[in-house]
Length: 315
Ligand SMILES: NC(=O)c1ccc[n+]([C@@H]2O[C@H](COP(=O)([O-])OP(=O)(O)OC[C@H]3O[C@@H](n4cnc5c(N)ncnc54)[C@H](O)[C@@H]3O)[C@@H](O)[C@H]2O)c1
Image 1 (tube, rainbow, N blue to C red):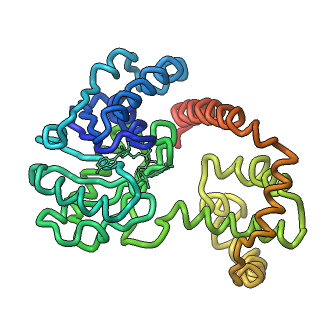
Image 2 (cartoon, helix red, strand yellow; image 1 turned 45 degrees about the horizontal axis):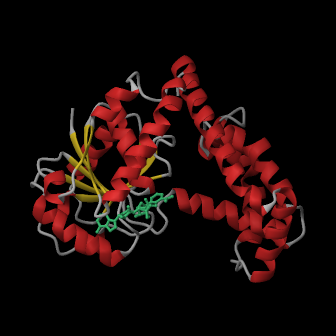
């Protein structure tokens, strides 16, 4: 059992509490707002029955998970003797800089300081710290208790052993960490998403098809394979001779397409209005909250199914 401090218990911090507690770790919950910690505990308590039913608690009961959560109003108390701190404070570089000065002072030298930041490189808020080699980015996809991927991004001064330890902790907790070799804008996931979104907007801007057709192309087509394999494995399996065969046959076509896609287009107001009006014809604005609940239920059910498939047939 490790001792984990969650610093910042908003949307993402709350979900991290679930990730570590269901893995059997002791979780210290700290947030400058005591109301945030209370609502994090409420959210977790409300989510547990569904998670038990869907087999997403790694064999633990809801009571066992709740018993592993301890609010800590004092940050020093939360991070004292922690093996791992998962910081999920607001995405403001000055807030992170001030917070890491405190964390570096309060946490013992063996404690790893991992940030959930979506876009800030760790070098932007850890440079001057005595303990900067134990700091890194561990970027989840929200909500991490359902979506396992975590992007581990070291700064130029992060100790490799710190990345190794974080990878092991997360993998053992049931997450799926990937390692970046260096800091890069957008990490991996947002770069991939950016490429797909750029093309989705281009297709609608050029009136090649409607918004609903682009979404269907992904949800009823590409996405079914991408749900359990990446783009490289997909093309490796899509030609009799594997990836080299695929690239020999289709590489020139993709090269021509990439030339058409190379010029960056802004998402200007007219284009956004066109996408918005086509989406609103498919879903009224007042139905967005209801549709979000539908999305979350689908996501939980599909994650449970994916875990079952991995257990039965391997990853
Ligand atoms: N929301 C997402 O989809 C998402 C996904 C991945 C990563 N992230 C990253 O996770 C981090 C948190 O995002 P969020 O969406 O949970 O934000 P949030 O606003 O829901 O939660 C932030 C929490 O931090 C607390 N806080 C404020 N100042 C603090 C301080 N000095 N020390 C500790 N806690 C403090 C706030 O009280 C709040 O409870 C950000 O860095 C964000 O980029 C967010």
